[in-house]
Image (cartoon, rainbow, N blue to C red; front, top):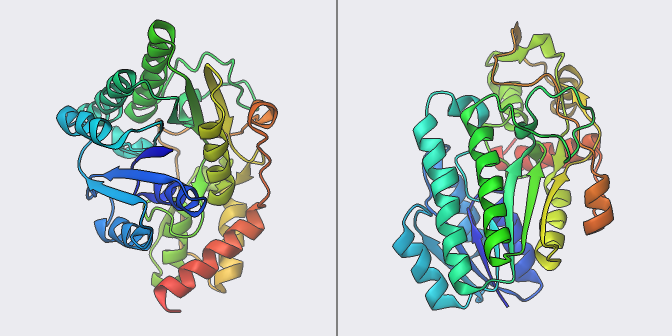
Length: 317
């Protein structure tokens, strides 16, 4: 069976690709290696996968419909993990057109090509950010999620709705996974774990929204990958499923754990929370447990320890 992974050189995509390759699957990965963060990191991820003979890495953009259609025509794709996106809530505030173009038009291209190829399963990466400032805690999939706070979650929610159209009209099997604050070794440098670890070494001042009194449901990369693989393996019609640990932690406590592992204090500055960011993310993962057998196994302390050990080795500390 051949799997297409979009964003295949990115943080989550490269980990998903590696696990599929380890179990002997054929993988076609597409990534445009853009400069949202240092492309060398994604190049390194791609190099780490290059030893697998059943991998084909394509450098290209999912907005290029001709390229997307050619990939499907040439590779007998059976299942799709659509993980490519312009990420980042706050960055999307300043680049609305770009985010809608990549995250919605790109998704449209993948859905159209998948329809033509008759693929067996389409997994669409979405985000817990679609819930906005909901008062329903923990976040549950039956929430309308119709009040996004920025272009990034708006584009992801739009892609969810578009995917349902393809399920309704042509019977496409689609599982939407709403990720919750994924972290771990080789994570994205624009996300808080890497930024905080850098700050323990550089002394750079880190802004803590609401003085650190915001809560996030951090989910370790290995747990997330297991959820993605389970979704790829089990067509369910059309389902939206939260994929998160279900144990929010305050930013203040999160910082203290990293400071303890690093043995260094972080230079912190309390600032107001911007209007693009909710006060909490909190995953009700009961649907993932029931439908996918999802069982997050890595605690925040263990996950941050593993992430710090990777970071220290990466930086040569």
